[in-house]
Every structure is written in structure tokens, then in C-alpha cells.
Image 1 (cartoon, rainbow, N blue to C red):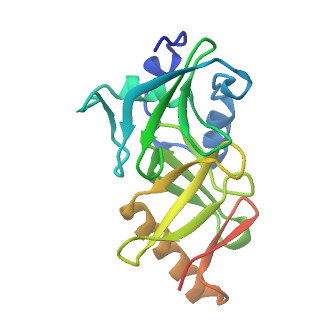
Image 2: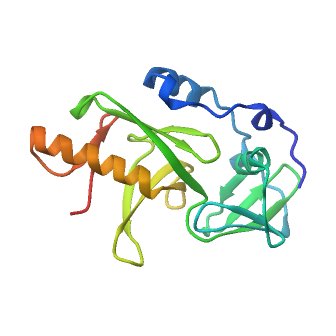
Amino acid sequence: MAAGADEPIRREPPDLRGLSLADIARLAAERRLPPVETWNPPDCGHSGMRIDRSGTWWHAGSPIGRPALVRLFSTILRREPDGRFVLVTPVEKLAIDVEDAPFLAVEAMSEGEGRERRIAFRLATDDLVIAGPDHPLRFAAGADGAPRPYLHVRGAAPWPLEALVARPVFYELAAWALAEQEAQGGPLGLWSDGAFFAFPT
């Protein structure tokens, strides 16, 4: 599949530890994605690609070893009205299999407390997302009964593109939520960018 933009290949991974939330919000806003929602090319079959439950991208049975290539493909990913995942360019549309969520949140940074808190996530593709009304967190039950948190990355309901929050990151969120509940009382959960996300209990 052809792709014309090489910006994701040149971009260095952000280091959240050295950034304020204002810096992260600016970087997230500056990220320009192709207008895949406006493209209407014909279906051209299957891409031979899949994204497994760990967020690893595969092609023809082998993992894609170049992170820059994964980042590039992730910018042309969208969901169809029937829920299918596809890779889209102005001239072709190819199906891609996704076992769980297409993205994985691998790092989180929190600033502020209570209603003033903001939480930024870095995805494995190096995208930056601030949880809030436009990027809510939701929880689903995993096969083992443990909660599986998902972050809305982009796209509209009922079929948004989401990131599974990696287990170590979820543990970090849970620790923040427990500390806040102990200090302030109330339900277990976290505020971010003006929205409250209740944790399953």
C-alpha cells in the first residue's frame, strides 16, 4: 500500500517525563493525520496484516519490525460503519484484522489533583492523547475477569479507534485513584480534563 507522507518516520518518540501537560497538549494538537474519513476508495481485498492482542502489527505471518512503518500505517487506519478495520489511501482500501484494540497505551503522565487533574497517555505508536470528554476511558471485563481499560484515540461512536491501556500503566492509574480516594473520599476513579472516569470495584 502506498503512502505519501514520511513525517511519522522522521518523528522522534516523545519523552513525557520532560514535558508539561501544556507541552503534551500542544504536541497532540500539532499532530496532523491524513483525512482518511473523507476518502472513499474501492475495496481492494485484504492487506495481509493483523494487529494482535499485544498491539504488535504483523504482515504475511511475520511481525513488522520497523516502528516507523507501524506508525505510518497507523495514520491511515480507520473503522467502517460495520465495525471493520481498514487501511485507507485516496486510491485503495484494504482490510486489516485487529484481535483487540489497534493501539496500546504504554505510558501515562498525570498533572494536578482532583477535578484539576489531567492525564496524558503515550501510545506505542508515539501518539499523545489526553484523557477527557473527547478521549474517554472505559473499562471492559477481560477473559480472566480482570478489568481491561481502553482509551478513545480517535473516530466516532459507535466504532472509535481505541488503545488498550497496558497493565503496568493501569496499575499506575489505579494507584493514583486509590491515593485520591484515600485523601478526598468519594467513588474510586480519576478526573482528567474535566471528566470523571469511575473505576470498576
